Image (cartoon, rainbow, N blue to C red; front, side):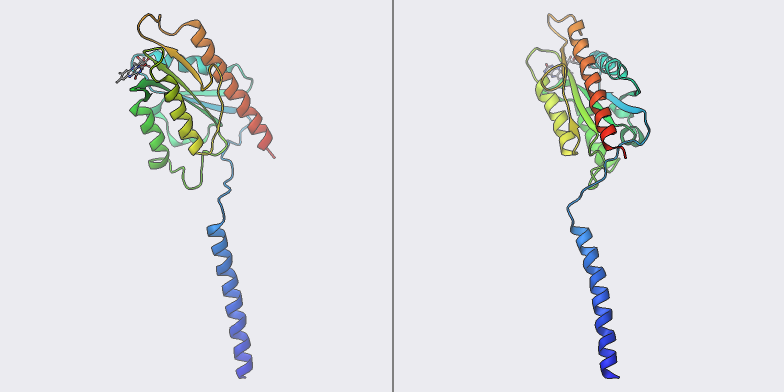
Length: 212
Ligand SMILES: Cc1cc2nc3c(=O)[nH]c(=O)nc-3n(C[C@H](O)[C@H](O)[C@H](O)COP(=O)(O)O)c2cc1C
């Protein structure tokens, strides 16, 4: 009888220990989150920006045109403050534009990225993983922070395990808006269109590559 009890106890210990062990392994396994791409066939690109005097908004519209030139692409154009969780998560690609403020992205754009966590809870699952991302910027001067601005935007995207692409310029599309500049010229609009087109093309490749 004593032997039987001991055997039963051992079985309970082994079974319980095994399940707890598994739970621990699951909890500590390196995260390999599933891509959160939208399952529809239509590709959705979110073009979002901050703009007070309208220059960055003009660039955003050209990015939109470029993305829409790719078949089967739907573009959502929104100011950063108006973006909702659904807009973000239902998009296969996100293109973010900012005016240069003190050689960096504007506070509104930074707040938008912070909302990804505070409001949308992207971490620890890395909910933005494998979405395509890109940046554009406008700045008053030729050389006073446009590239830093685009790089800090793509840095936020890389931190979210997104797939970052560029076109129109090495780090994205940009335009100079003050001084002798006539505002956004045709060359700068073309750069923004090229960026939008490349984003939609690459997002399409990723989406097709990941579909079952
Ligand atoms: C607070 C503030 C800071 C700025 N800092 C810079 C700067 O560091 N470098 C630059 O090139 N332009 C700077 N600018 C100019 C804007 O980047 C430029 O006018 C931009 O095109 C404005 O974009 P928007 O028309 O979309 O609002 C600054 C503007 C403001 C209001």
